[in-house]
Every structure is written in structure tokens, then in C-alpha cells.
Image (cartoon, rainbow, N blue to C red):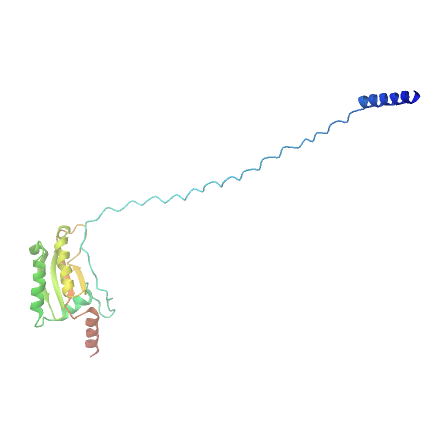
Length: 201
């Protein structure tokens, strides 16, 4: 009986102790909320450089005829005429036996074009070069160019176009033009060689 009393007392003590013992304070870990990763902001767009203001365009000038200059540079000892070596050869040569035939062919070519009596004025040929007197204006461009293209196709591509007198926006129309063209079988290079050989003698 004594043993049972002791066991009961011990059990009661344990119950009291368990109920009355100080409870450990709960440790709550306060974890600071992690900051969300800062989003990488795209770089601000760079504004393209402001283009310079367009310059005011010059007023349109009156159309002028195309001018084809000789590709041969003027000799420092002997200034070249405006028509280059073709004009120089024409001025130092005389017509040969076939000049009249070449003149008739050029006249026939232009006669097939419209406004022939206005565009075409005269043609003279020497041994190696023909000089064609023409008139040009914007309204006469088609017969003017059409005749010259056919002459170039039949004679040669060695061509120089020279306006008669000063040409500008106020020049009255049609404008007098002179075309110097090498005859078939002749070239500026060959004419220069001939002139050089003659100067050496």
C-alpha cells in the first residue's frame, strides 16, 4: 500500500510539474521578405540625329540642249576649239572626192524626221569630219535626237556638239547647234596622230 501511495504522489507531482513549468517562448523566425529582383529596364531609345533642313532648291532653269564635248584634252601648245579635235580637223581640212556623198546621206537621214526644215540647216564634210548645222528646242528634241542617233549609228560615235554663241536661260528658241562628227573610218585618236606626225616634219 505504501508503494502505491508513493507512486500516486510521484504521478501527481509529474502532472503538476508538467502543467506549471514555464513554456519556452516560441521563436518565430522573422525572415525579411526578399526583395523582388529589380527588373532590368531597357535603355531609353536614342533619338536619331535631326537631319539638316533641306536647302531651298534653285528655280528650274530653262532646258538646254545636251552638249557632248570631245574626250581629248586641249594641247597646252595649241588651244583646242570648243568642238575639240573634230572641229580642229574640220577647219584644217578640205572636202575630198567623197564629201558630197556623205553630205547627201546626212541630209537624207534628217529629212526623214519631223520638222526637218526647222531642225536641219546645213551640212559640210571634209576628208574626215562632217559639220552639221542644226536647231534645238525642247519641242524639237525628238527629231533633233532622232536624226543625230541615226547619223552616229551610220558614221561613227566620235561626236562633239557645240552651241553657236552663248547659251543661257534667256537664249531664244530654237538654239543654233553645230555637230562635228567623224566620218566612217576616222577617229579622234587617228586625227591626233596625223596632226602630231605633220607637226614633226
